[in-house]
Image 1 (cartoon, one colour):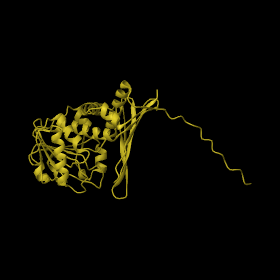
Image 2 (cartoon, helix red, strand yellow):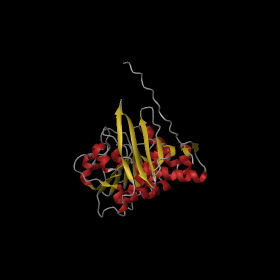
Image 3 (cartoon, one colour):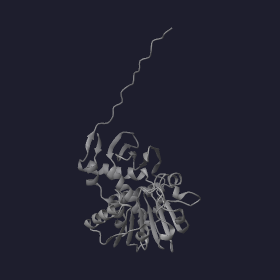
Length: 323
């Protein structure tokens, strides 16, 4: 059977956020049981903040890698999936929307596990492309009553707040400062490109859960290291990558894998002051969503047929002897 090329529009049509959260949860449980694997994340940087990334994993008989170049001009990520047994090409997925769903779904899983049951107010810091999916992910697991929005650019905050209201958000307020946004919030999500911390321990209310989403390379930081001293749990989707790439978590801090938390039932520790989840981006989650997309695309006939590559022998001539 031919492989499939699955477009951005196909991804949006085939996969809902609730489906993504369920698929990621299943994949994390399999990872905790040693039945799924995440490829070590790798990246290279050049120019003024440009980066090339590669992530991947194996789950449910499917292996894949997602790669993208993040530049000032944008990004065009692609997920390539192969059959884990035969190595046959299964699909190529245009992965911008998929990446947003994956990142949001992982934050949803972490929030469901670590946020207080009564957390109904969210502070979202940053209003870029990840912001709306992040709000939706928290709302999927902790139905929100109020959302506080902050951006370095007030006009962006106003525009994003209007978008949330149009999407049906119950109460949305624009906060003039980070401290105003996070004060009293039960969940705080940072989705910025900040190069120095914007959230300190003194800003956070007791009982808060923090999702750190934006600082995935060493040149970025959103959360001050003093927050760690208040944390009952510091978790990451990929603890090794967090150690290597998240300078916020430098030192001897214990980092618990999200898969272990999910496998253990995902309960917030009794009396916890602050819990922190640092999202690094794991290829396992991309492959899990890709596998679900492939199943749905096959069932609905969605996606453009993509003939499998056919190896061609490489017959290279040699130079005649000059003897």
